[in-house]
Length: 265
Image (cartoon, rainbow, N blue to C red; front, side):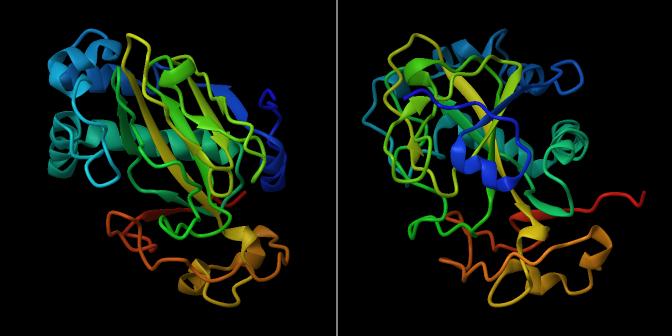
């Protein structure tokens, strides 16, 4: 079954498919900045800097973010990379806010994925709110392509939770995709193309999907005047499966999330 592409009119429509859009690579030059940092002309050839990785044992959840590329990238990011982080913040606040209405929390820095030939990028097939990942319910997943992603270099996802009709989320290098990775199982196959796929992914948590009851993230935001944003009552969301992300950051602003609040009209 082919994944249905649909206009994102509400969070609920994510149950029916995914939403693909183009972005301006001149305004948001993610690929250009990352390629310059690694000293390559084209990120699809990034694996040539560490060809041993292509022939190594399959990566696991424990070491998939510990490759030479990840270590170098996150060392730079953690030492301060305002050109990149400011561009990402601008992308979220200028582009994502047009689709997902605020206020919302978003992943402070996107996850960096490198899918080299003969390897996986994310080894474990999963949905983000499953017990081993523990993400809060109602999170929305977004993947930004820095290179073309196709066939076995792409992320594969089922169209609705539990259906198991996995199809690749093929993307051009100027596209991003919004999908229900919180409930739909997704993952990678070994990349049998000759190109490396580089991408970002991050998550957005709409405040208005929560009613403030129970152990929801928004018990931390009682200072926000939700009524000002014409919130509606959506019922109990549920407890967190885990108090923090897989890599240890707590589900709080200043930790895993940053709060985006739309300007007054």
